[in-house]
Length: 333
Image 1 (cartoon, rainbow, N blue to C red):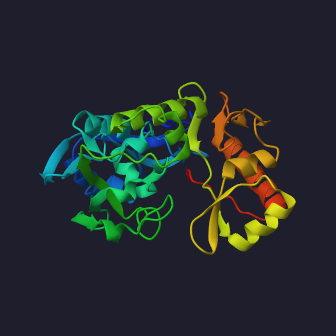
Image 2: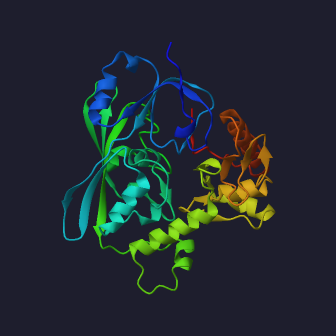
Protein backbone atom coordinates (compact mmCIF):
# COMPACT_ATOMS: atom_id res chain seq x y z
CA UNK A 1 0.00 0.00 0.00
CA UNK A 2 1.35 3.43 -0.96
CA UNK A 3 1.81 6.08 1.67
CA UNK A 4 -0.84 8.76 1.49
CA UNK A 5 0.24 12.19 0.21
CA UNK A 6 -0.24 15.26 2.39
CA UNK A 7 -2.38 18.09 1.01
CA UNK A 8 -1.68 20.53 3.85
CA UNK A 9 0.62 22.72 1.76
CA UNK A 10 -1.68 22.47 -1.28
CA UNK A 11 -4.78 24.15 0.19
CA UNK A 12 -4.89 27.74 1.41
CA UNK A 13 -6.93 26.80 4.47
CA UNK A 14 -3.89 24.77 5.57
CA UNK A 15 -6.14 21.86 6.56
CA UNK A 16 -4.10 18.77 7.43
CA UNK A 17 -5.55 16.14 5.11
CA UNK A 18 -4.09 13.66 2.65
CA UNK A 19 -4.88 11.99 -0.69
CA UNK A 20 -4.19 8.55 -2.06
CA UNK A 21 -1.86 10.07 -4.65
CA UNK A 22 -0.88 13.39 -6.26
CA UNK A 23 -0.07 13.62 -9.98
CA UNK A 24 1.48 16.86 -11.20
CA UNK A 25 0.24 17.94 -14.64
CA UNK A 26 2.95 19.79 -16.60
CA UNK A 27 1.64 19.15 -20.10
CA UNK A 28 -1.78 18.47 -21.62
CA UNK A 29 -0.48 15.04 -22.60
CA UNK A 30 -0.21 14.24 -18.89
CA UNK A 31 -4.00 14.63 -18.68
CA UNK A 32 -4.55 12.27 -21.61
CA UNK A 33 -2.11 9.79 -20.07
CA UNK A 34 -3.97 9.85 -16.75
CA UNK A 35 -7.39 9.51 -18.38
CA UNK A 36 -6.08 6.51 -20.30
CA UNK A 37 -4.71 4.80 -17.19
CA UNK A 38 -6.43 2.47 -14.69
CA UNK A 39 -6.13 5.24 -12.06
CA UNK A 40 -8.83 7.17 -13.93
CA UNK A 41 -11.38 4.67 -12.61
CA UNK A 42 -10.73 5.87 -9.05
CA UNK A 43 -11.95 9.24 -7.78
CA UNK A 44 -9.88 12.22 -8.86
CA UNK A 45 -9.98 15.95 -8.26
CA UNK A 46 -8.32 18.68 -10.33
CA UNK A 47 -6.57 21.16 -8.04
CA UNK A 48 -5.17 24.55 -8.94
CA UNK A 49 -3.70 26.46 -5.99
CA UNK A 50 -6.26 25.03 -3.53
CA UNK A 51 -7.48 28.58 -2.92
CA UNK A 52 -11.21 27.94 -3.23
CA UNK A 53 -11.58 24.50 -1.66
CA UNK A 54 -12.22 23.10 1.80
CA UNK A 55 -11.23 19.49 2.45
CA UNK A 56 -13.36 18.14 5.27
CA UNK A 57 -11.58 14.76 5.38
CA UNK A 58 -8.83 12.78 3.65
CA UNK A 59 -9.42 12.46 -0.08
CA UNK A 60 -9.80 8.84 -1.15
CA UNK A 61 -8.51 9.31 -4.66
CA UNK A 62 -5.99 11.05 -6.90
CA UNK A 63 -5.28 14.78 -6.93
CA UNK A 64 -4.34 16.21 -10.34
CA UNK A 65 -2.23 19.29 -9.57
CA UNK A 66 -2.28 21.69 -12.52
CA UNK A 67 1.15 23.14 -13.36
CA UNK A 68 0.89 23.73 -17.12
CA UNK A 69 2.53 26.98 -18.27
CA UNK A 70 2.36 29.18 -21.33
CA UNK A 71 0.90 32.46 -22.63
CA UNK A 72 0.40 33.20 -26.32
CA UNK A 73 -1.11 35.91 -28.48
CA UNK A 74 -3.84 34.41 -30.66
CA UNK A 75 -4.67 37.50 -32.70
CA UNK A 76 -5.08 41.24 -32.40
CA UNK A 77 -6.64 44.30 -33.98
CA UNK A 78 -5.81 47.95 -33.50
CA UNK A 79 -7.71 48.07 -30.21
CA UNK A 80 -8.24 44.45 -29.09
CA UNK A 81 -5.92 41.56 -28.35
CA UNK A 82 -6.78 37.90 -27.83
CA UNK A 83 -4.51 36.22 -25.27
CA UNK A 84 -4.54 32.50 -24.43
CA UNK A 85 -3.08 31.20 -21.16
CA UNK A 86 -2.52 27.65 -19.92
CA UNK A 87 -4.67 26.45 -17.01
CA UNK A 88 -1.70 26.14 -14.66
CA UNK A 89 -0.59 29.76 -14.96
CA UNK A 90 -0.83 31.72 -11.71
CA UNK A 91 -3.78 34.10 -12.05
CA UNK A 92 -2.20 37.21 -10.57
CA UNK A 93 1.05 36.67 -12.48
CA UNK A 94 -1.04 36.49 -15.65
CA UNK A 95 -2.84 39.73 -14.77
CA UNK A 96 0.53 41.42 -14.20
CA UNK A 97 1.86 40.04 -17.50
CA UNK A 98 -1.09 41.66 -19.28
CA UNK A 99 -0.47 45.00 -17.58
CA UNK A 100 3.23 45.00 -18.49
CA UNK A 101 2.18 44.62 -22.13
CA UNK A 102 -0.60 47.24 -21.82
CA UNK A 103 -3.41 44.70 -22.22
CA UNK A 104 -6.22 46.15 -20.11
CA UNK A 105 -9.35 44.69 -18.53
CA UNK A 106 -8.27 42.26 -15.84
CA UNK A 107 -6.78 44.81 -13.42
CA UNK A 108 -9.89 44.88 -11.20
CA UNK A 109 -9.30 41.15 -10.58
CA UNK A 110 -5.87 41.77 -9.06
CA UNK A 111 -4.40 39.59 -6.34
CA UNK A 112 -7.05 36.86 -6.54
CA UNK A 113 -5.28 33.63 -5.59
CA UNK A 114 -5.57 30.63 -7.89
CA UNK A 115 -4.82 29.44 -11.40
CA UNK A 116 -6.05 30.67 -14.78
CA UNK A 117 -7.88 27.37 -15.32
CA UNK A 118 -10.00 27.94 -12.23
CA UNK A 119 -11.16 31.42 -13.29
CA UNK A 120 -14.01 30.35 -15.62
CA UNK A 121 -15.22 27.59 -13.30
CA UNK A 122 -15.94 30.07 -10.55
CA UNK A 123 -16.48 33.07 -12.83
CA UNK A 124 -14.22 34.98 -10.48
CA UNK A 125 -15.19 38.57 -9.84
CA UNK A 126 -14.25 41.57 -7.72
CA UNK A 127 -14.50 45.35 -7.62
CA UNK A 128 -17.08 45.73 -10.35
CA UNK A 129 -15.84 43.13 -12.85
CA UNK A 130 -16.29 39.44 -13.59
CA UNK A 131 -13.95 37.32 -15.68
CA UNK A 132 -16.82 36.29 -18.00
CA UNK A 133 -16.66 39.82 -19.45
CA UNK A 134 -13.27 38.97 -20.96
CA UNK A 135 -13.30 35.23 -21.66
CA UNK A 136 -13.86 34.35 -25.33
CA UNK A 137 -13.09 30.63 -25.25
CA UNK A 138 -12.37 27.84 -22.78
CA UNK A 139 -10.44 24.81 -24.01
CA UNK A 140 -10.88 21.50 -22.23
CA UNK A 141 -10.44 17.74 -22.43
CA UNK A 142 -13.47 15.50 -22.05
CA UNK A 143 -13.05 13.05 -19.18
CA UNK A 144 -15.29 10.45 -20.86
CA UNK A 145 -13.57 10.17 -24.24
CA UNK A 146 -10.39 12.28 -23.96
CA UNK A 147 -11.46 14.52 -26.88
CA UNK A 148 -10.43 18.16 -27.11
CA UNK A 149 -13.37 20.56 -26.71
CA UNK A 150 -13.82 24.29 -27.17
CA UNK A 151 -16.45 26.27 -25.27
CA UNK A 152 -17.41 29.69 -26.59
CA UNK A 153 -18.34 32.29 -23.97
CA UNK A 154 -22.06 31.66 -24.43
CA UNK A 155 -21.53 27.90 -23.96
CA UNK A 156 -20.03 28.43 -20.51
CA UNK A 157 -23.37 29.47 -18.98
CA UNK A 158 -21.70 32.00 -16.72
CA UNK A 159 -23.60 33.21 -13.67
CA UNK A 160 -22.79 34.82 -10.35
CA UNK A 161 -19.72 32.86 -9.18
CA UNK A 162 -20.69 29.88 -11.29
CA UNK A 163 -20.54 28.32 -14.76
CA UNK A 164 -21.39 25.15 -16.64
CA UNK A 165 -18.14 23.68 -15.29
CA UNK A 166 -19.43 24.07 -11.73
CA UNK A 167 -23.02 23.03 -12.48
CA UNK A 168 -24.31 20.91 -15.40
CA UNK A 169 -20.87 19.68 -16.53
CA UNK A 170 -19.14 19.47 -13.16
CA UNK A 171 -16.34 16.89 -13.30
CA UNK A 172 -16.91 16.16 -16.99
CA UNK A 173 -14.10 18.30 -18.40
CA UNK A 174 -10.55 19.27 -17.46
CA UNK A 175 -9.75 22.83 -18.55
CA UNK A 176 -6.43 23.21 -20.41
CA UNK A 177 -6.46 26.82 -21.67
CA UNK A 178 -8.50 30.01 -21.42
CA UNK A 179 -8.62 32.73 -24.07
CA UNK A 180 -9.30 36.37 -23.15
CA UNK A 181 -10.19 39.44 -25.21
CA UNK A 182 -8.48 42.50 -23.74
CA UNK A 183 -8.12 46.13 -24.77
CA UNK A 184 -4.79 47.61 -25.86
CA UNK A 185 -4.09 50.72 -23.77
CA UNK A 186 -7.74 50.76 -22.75
CA UNK A 187 -9.63 52.91 -20.26
CA UNK A 188 -9.91 51.10 -16.92
CA UNK A 189 -13.13 50.60 -14.98
CA UNK A 190 -13.15 52.78 -11.86
CA UNK A 191 -16.90 52.75 -11.18
CA UNK A 192 -16.52 50.76 -7.96
CA UNK A 193 -16.68 53.27 -5.09
CA UNK A 194 -13.61 52.07 -3.17
CA UNK A 195 -11.46 52.27 -6.30
CA UNK A 196 -12.90 55.62 -7.34
CA UNK A 197 -12.22 57.11 -3.89
CA UNK A 198 -8.67 55.80 -3.73
CA UNK A 199 -7.81 57.16 -7.20
CA UNK A 200 -9.70 60.45 -6.91
CA UNK A 201 -6.48 62.52 -6.88
CA UNK A 202 -5.16 61.03 -10.15
CA UNK A 203 -6.14 62.97 -13.29
CA UNK A 204 -5.60 60.26 -15.88
CA UNK A 205 -6.09 56.84 -14.32
CA UNK A 206 -4.21 53.95 -15.93
CA UNK A 207 -4.86 50.23 -15.64
CA UNK A 208 -1.77 49.87 -13.44
CA UNK A 209 -3.24 52.45 -11.03
CA UNK A 210 -6.38 50.31 -10.70
CA UNK A 211 -4.28 47.19 -10.13
CA UNK A 212 -2.33 48.97 -7.38
CA UNK A 213 -5.51 50.30 -5.76
CA UNK A 214 -7.22 46.90 -5.77
CA UNK A 215 -4.08 45.22 -4.41
CA UNK A 216 -3.92 47.72 -1.56
CA UNK A 217 -7.61 47.38 -0.70
CA UNK A 218 -7.40 43.58 -0.73
CA UNK A 219 -4.25 43.58 1.40
CA UNK A 220 -5.87 45.59 4.20
CA UNK A 221 -9.26 43.86 4.08
CA UNK A 222 -8.29 40.23 3.57
CA UNK A 223 -5.91 38.13 5.68
CA UNK A 224 -2.83 36.58 4.09
CA UNK A 225 -3.58 32.84 3.78
CA UNK A 226 0.10 32.11 4.49
CA UNK A 227 -0.39 33.62 7.96
CA UNK A 228 -4.01 32.70 8.69
CA UNK A 229 -5.36 29.90 6.51
CA UNK A 230 -8.41 30.98 4.50
CA UNK A 231 -10.04 30.77 1.08
CA UNK A 232 -11.10 34.40 0.72
CA UNK A 233 -14.84 35.01 0.60
CA UNK A 234 -16.54 31.91 2.01
CA UNK A 235 -20.12 32.89 1.13
CA UNK A 236 -21.78 34.46 -1.89
CA UNK A 237 -23.59 37.76 -1.51
CA UNK A 238 -27.25 36.70 -1.48
CA UNK A 239 -29.71 37.87 -4.12
CA UNK A 240 -33.23 38.40 -2.76
CA UNK A 241 -36.52 39.95 -3.92
CA UNK A 242 -36.75 43.71 -3.45
CA UNK A 243 -39.98 43.17 -1.53
CA UNK A 244 -38.13 41.03 1.04
CA UNK A 245 -35.42 43.65 1.44
CA UNK A 246 -38.03 46.38 1.90
CA UNK A 247 -39.51 44.45 4.82
CA UNK A 248 -36.07 43.85 6.35
CA UNK A 249 -35.24 47.57 6.16
CA UNK A 250 -38.19 48.36 8.39
CA UNK A 251 -36.61 46.32 11.16
CA UNK A 252 -32.93 46.89 10.29
CA UNK A 253 -32.62 50.41 8.80
CA UNK A 254 -28.84 50.13 8.32
CA UNK A 255 -29.00 47.11 6.02
CA UNK A 256 -27.51 47.68 2.58
CA UNK A 257 -28.36 46.23 -0.81
CA UNK A 258 -27.56 46.93 -4.45
CA UNK A 259 -30.19 46.79 -7.16
CA UNK A 260 -29.61 44.21 -9.90
CA UNK A 261 -32.91 44.67 -11.65
CA UNK A 262 -36.47 45.73 -11.10
CA UNK A 263 -37.38 42.88 -8.76
CA UNK A 264 -34.09 41.74 -7.18
CA UNK A 265 -31.23 43.13 -5.16
CA UNK A 266 -27.91 41.86 -3.85
CA UNK A 267 -27.20 42.06 -0.13
CA UNK A 268 -23.86 42.11 1.65
CA UNK A 269 -23.18 38.70 3.18
CA UNK A 270 -20.49 40.32 5.32
CA UNK A 271 -23.02 42.74 6.82
CA UNK A 272 -25.51 39.96 7.52
CA UNK A 273 -22.81 37.93 9.27
CA UNK A 274 -21.75 40.95 11.32
CA UNK A 275 -25.34 41.80 12.29
CA UNK A 276 -25.75 38.18 13.39
CA UNK A 277 -22.93 38.66 15.91
CA UNK A 278 -20.32 36.42 14.30
CA UNK A 279 -17.69 38.99 13.32
CA UNK A 280 -14.42 38.10 15.10
CA UNK A 281 -15.92 35.06 16.84
CA UNK A 282 -14.08 31.72 17.14
CA UNK A 283 -15.27 28.13 17.09
CA UNK A 284 -12.61 25.67 18.18
CA UNK A 285 -9.57 26.75 16.12
CA UNK A 286 -11.67 28.24 13.33
CA UNK A 287 -13.03 31.74 13.31
CA UNK A 288 -14.60 34.68 11.50
CA UNK A 289 -12.04 37.27 10.52
CA UNK A 290 -12.35 40.41 12.72
CA UNK A 291 -11.86 42.81 9.79
CA UNK A 292 -13.79 40.95 7.09
CA UNK A 293 -16.59 38.67 8.33
CA UNK A 294 -16.99 37.14 4.87
CA UNK A 295 -13.69 35.31 5.47
CA UNK A 296 -13.48 32.21 7.66
CA UNK A 297 -10.04 31.52 9.11
CA UNK A 298 -8.01 28.55 10.28
CA UNK A 299 -6.12 29.85 13.30
CA UNK A 300 -3.72 26.92 13.22
CA UNK A 301 -5.18 23.50 13.85
CA UNK A 302 -8.79 23.69 12.67
CA UNK A 303 -10.08 20.72 10.74
CA UNK A 304 -12.14 21.08 7.62
CA UNK A 305 -15.13 19.88 9.62
CA UNK A 306 -14.55 22.62 12.22
CA UNK A 307 -14.67 25.25 9.49
CA UNK A 308 -17.73 23.74 7.85
CA UNK A 309 -19.51 23.48 11.21
CA UNK A 310 -18.76 27.15 11.83
CA UNK A 311 -20.17 28.02 8.40
CA UNK A 312 -23.34 26.06 9.17
CA UNK A 313 -23.87 27.89 12.48
CA UNK A 314 -23.48 31.21 10.67
CA UNK A 315 -25.93 30.17 7.96
CA UNK A 316 -28.50 29.14 10.56
CA UNK A 317 -28.22 32.37 12.54
CA UNK A 318 -28.40 34.56 9.43
CA UNK A 319 -31.47 32.70 8.22
CA UNK A 320 -33.20 32.86 11.60
CA UNK A 321 -32.66 36.63 11.78
CA UNK A 322 -33.23 37.67 8.17
CA UNK A 323 -34.81 34.68 6.40
CA UNK A 324 -31.91 34.91 3.95
CA UNK A 325 -29.99 31.77 2.99
CA UNK A 326 -26.25 32.25 2.63
CA UNK A 327 -24.78 30.05 -0.10
CA UNK A 328 -21.25 28.73 0.31
CA UNK A 329 -18.90 29.90 -2.44
CA UNK A 330 -16.01 27.57 -1.56
CA UNK A 331 -15.95 24.04 -2.99
CA UNK A 332 -16.51 21.53 -0.19
CA UNK A 333 -14.69 18.20 -0.60
